[in-house]
Length: 86
Image 1 (tube, rainbow, N blue to C red):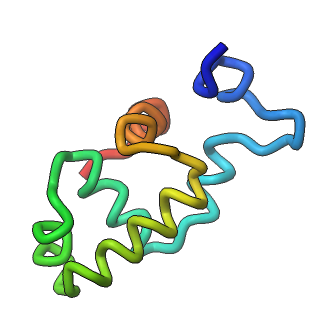
Image 2 (cartoon, rainbow, N blue to C red):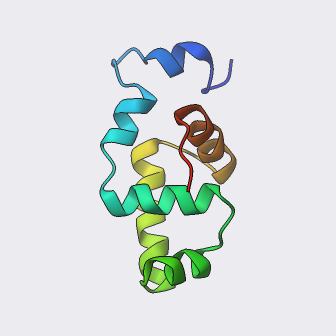
């Protein structure tokens, strides 16, 4: 069974849900997630937000950890369920 199965969407044994994880993101991390899942590369994310590519990568890393996404494909699936868009 995959980690994006309906029971994980509704809540894990710890009571944590994807919506709760998204709510824990900072405003900047929410901006980054929207840009990343829309297909922008790190350099483009930095340009859009007026930050360096390295800072954008750092925000992306923290956001991936908070969302517990192991890969970009996982993050895209989560964002789609949360209706995150640019």
